[in-house]
Image (cartoon, rainbow, N blue to C red):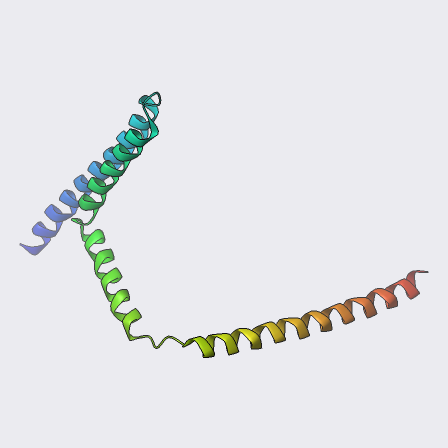
Amino acid sequence: MTANTENGNAAFDMAKWVVVALLVASAVVGNHYFAQEPILYRVLGVLALAIVALLVVLQTVKGAAFAQMVKDARVEMRKVVWPNRQETQQTTLVVLGVVVVMALILWGMDSLLGWFVSLIIS
């Protein structure tokens, strides 16, 4: 019985994805067809079709799983302890200092190797 139900849900999900594809295609074709209309109307039409397509996608199994993942990600983001202004400034200064030091080291190595190669070639 569950296999039969899963096959029915899979077929229904496939139909939903076909509807989504048709909605997106109609947005593209409609935008091209109504090219002479003001851009505001075309944008509103495309946005309306995109919202309807998104609502249909959220009704599928994969869409519902994606929506749940987004909700879980938001919950996890609330758990993060973000650095305060002072910590951010100090970390930024450390990163900039390391970048400058590494740039000087690489510049020195490049100059030294370039000088050495010019001695060998000439």
